[in-house]
View 1 (spheres, rainbow, N blue to C red):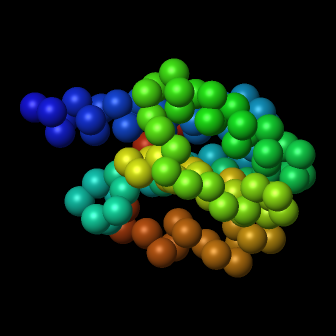
View 2: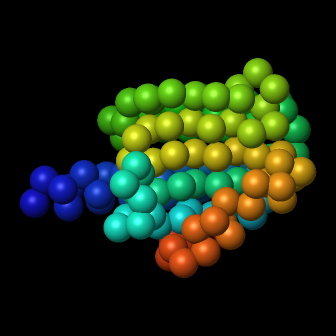
Amino acid sequence: MARTKKTDEARAFALAAANNAVDRHCTDVVIVDLRGKSPATDYFVIATTTSPRQARTVADEIHDLARIHDHERFGVAGYDQARWILIDYVDVVIHLFDKDYREYYDLEMLWGDADRLKVGHQ
């Protein structure tokens, strides 16, 4: 029962983070469901940003959402350059890419067999 509640909370946070990215005009926002496929996390939220400023703003707002959803940030990388900001909340990992980095790393292809969650605002 506790695992189901934790998974539901992670899913709700992933959806809130993705919807925030959409609201802030990020493109190609995707939630990759990694439950049962990754031993490290349950969900990836992946979004493309148009500028370093936008990427940092979305990262900051998602951090605020994490507090509301009672998720503690484990780590963050790439914030200063903002070409790929990775924010690790353990059960949910956020990836905010600029267009070039998104195409180069192509995380969706790496997890091509994983299900995707529909982002509500798209």
